[in-house]
Image (cartoon, rainbow, N blue to C red; front, side, top):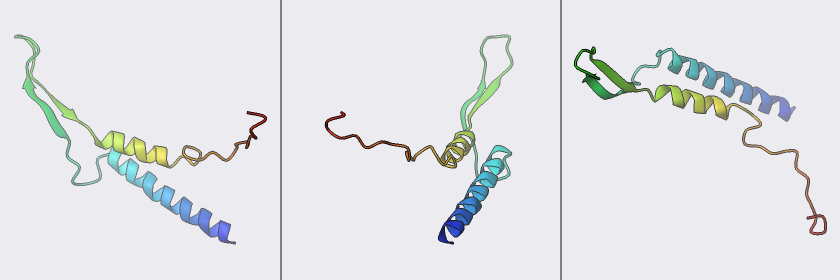
Length: 86
């Protein structure tokens, strides 16, 4: 019974984090402003000016999605070796 509730809590947390990541990707989360790295830079005399932003909301979302992988930080299939077998 306790395993069921632990699984249910984990599933709810994963769903909340997944929805948060989707909100980050679609720019629905307010207050996340990207840092302007280059502003109106010309590559040559005849080129149009361009602006470059550092988008840190995308990597944050990817790292959160990596945390949702259950086997990323666990190692359940290990064999304990004795000194003779080592």
